[in-house]
Length: 444
Image (cartoon, one colour):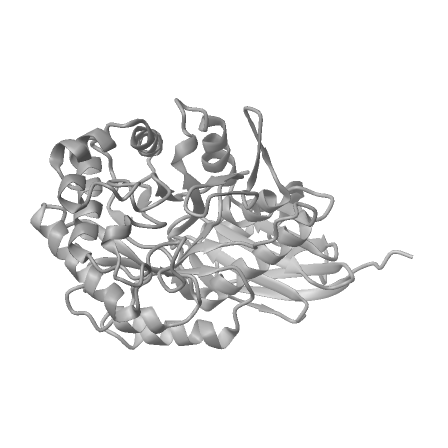
């Protein structure tokens, strides 16, 4: 016998808000641009998924000035040599991808990852030592992008996962990372790139060690656009609270927090619904903790130069001249498409512990998106009441979209915001067990 659905009361409160949302998006490998080869994937990500944040790594390693380590510092940083690199095929692909995004109103952010030329390292062969050469290399790329390619951007992530080192990037402890960022800011100012802000520290392990060092720097005040962390596991709530405490109790209070990489490291390809579910659960954890933005690792299945391996972490399955959305893509779409930049997370209450519900609205409270996960083994019949919203919102119908093991962000129907049948006087929907749902007045 089919369970009729347990009635669950949910309330969304318009006047009690938390963090502002900067957006959602993807990490993306620009090497595959190849004269627009990626345009079908880009159109899906931008126009259907709703991604607005794009973390672009053009070279894949941080050794582009001397990949073989044979030139040495002076020759590698010579102006004609840098010109040949930035006018070369690989960087031209990256510039073209960024230009395509610019033409559609998106300001991507540049990042660098992977190993550096060996002559930049300390005698241990692991730790970055030549800060001068490294920062000069980074600033040369940013200056070229701005002045020669005329690209519109102002965010930069200089290092990736220095807490675990190669092949993600050279090793640096928190104090060393902070000193390098300070030197980078000085060089950016010298080259007239005063508006470039940093996304740091992009560390692999979720803790506050690097943030504690960065927030002690007076020189970096006003130059950190967001603190970036990575998430590939289930992070305890206390770890989230510790990170937020460090920022809020420092001069950097109010600086946004982004999860600049999140996902799951399952690589068999046989557990796609599991991956979609745990990724969504981690996204909920981030939003509940107060994060302002999240970026999936990564956009599509591809070969990653930094660790020299083919991976299937992408939202899109890469085929022969085609890109196919996976289950994780549709799970992300439930949030990415309908929670717009500038929305605020609102207080929500739910009387059932097996149902996770989050709500987001624009400042005028005339656009509203509610996302949820039914973790129960039985259907849930929601009666969602809107408290303190404009009357005009209560007269609207809401789209009901759902992803489950069998459904891919399907639009189930349109439901009145104010129910007509007592006791279901709110948004009245039945949510099957083990499913993701969205209720929104944003058009699909």
